[in-house]
Length: 213
Image 1 (cartoon, one colour):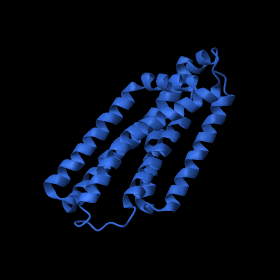
Image 2: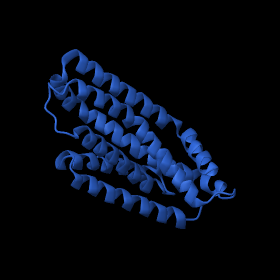
Image 3: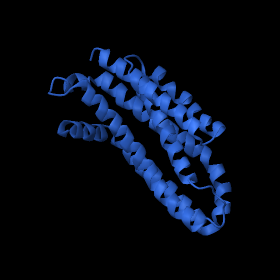
Image 4: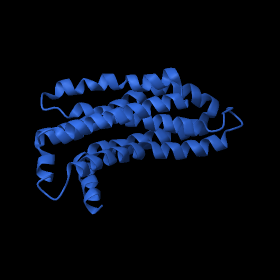
């Protein structure tokens, strides 16, 4: 357990810029949402949210995918795992720590938004009719979308060759939030994203565990 914690910390330090970016973006979005709602009301916030969702979606999708790519690609090029496995550390521990670090970055981004959303919905339920559990559906879809994009980045990042082909996965990752927009926030979409996540993680682990370091 101590080894796993150490590996997670190492991943976070090695890719600190992404974690700082998650904190900054989450803080800006939370502050922006709260400020607009308090200033204009929840009804106007829906209009503002539609307009601002496109650039935010692109930034978040590219960001979490790039984190996965960066973790695997820098490991591949700098022989990080080769060094770590020379110590009393297994590939499974390295891979698990890498995924946990990615999950931490995603949670750093979405948890403040979820807390702010819960408070604001409670304050403005009389202004905007919302079905019960809407916040849960939104946060579940946001989490699964981010994690799916991240796992896609992990899979694409394990590549010896030029970084340019690997970065080609970033436009592909934009199709994942598009799926959510088209299909909605229902359990069927959550199931599809979950299957995609499991498939990506399984494929990445197979490549990582069987490749020479």
